[in-house]
Image (spheres, rainbow, N blue to C red):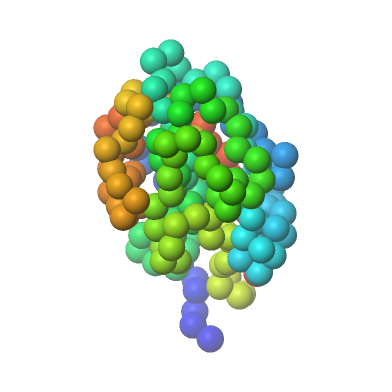
Length: 174
C-alpha cells in the first residue's frame, strides 16, 4: 500500500481574498460533521440538500462547488461545479445534480471526468477527507464559461466575480 502520510491541506477558502459571508445549511449533514452515506460514491453519489440566505445586495447569480483539499494530489479533487444558478434560487434539493437544474444553470466536468456530483471517495485507509461545499454570490448573471470549462477555470472566474461566499464542510473516511 502507498504511504499516504502528508501534511493536512489548508481550508481552500482561507487562501483566497476574504469576502462577506452568508448562511449555508444542509438537511443531509451539519457543518464539520460526517456526510451521509448517500453523498459517497459507494452510496450512490447523491448531491446533498443545500439552502442559503443572506447573500450580499447586488448578487446576480450563484455558483455552487464541492472541493476536497485532502485528496492525495497537489491540486485536491473537485467533486461538483454548478454555475449560472439564478439569483432567485436559494435551495437545491438532495439529488439536484441528477435532476433538472434551475433554468440557465449547468454543471462542468469534475475530476472524475463528467459533469455532476461525484460522491466522496477517499482512498481506503486514508484519514478523513473534508468536502467543502460553497455557494458563491456573483456580480454577473452568467459567469461566461461553457459546459466544457474545467473546475480550475471556473474557480478563476468565480474569484473575479464573487461578492460573497457561504461555506460548510462535511467529512468522510473509507
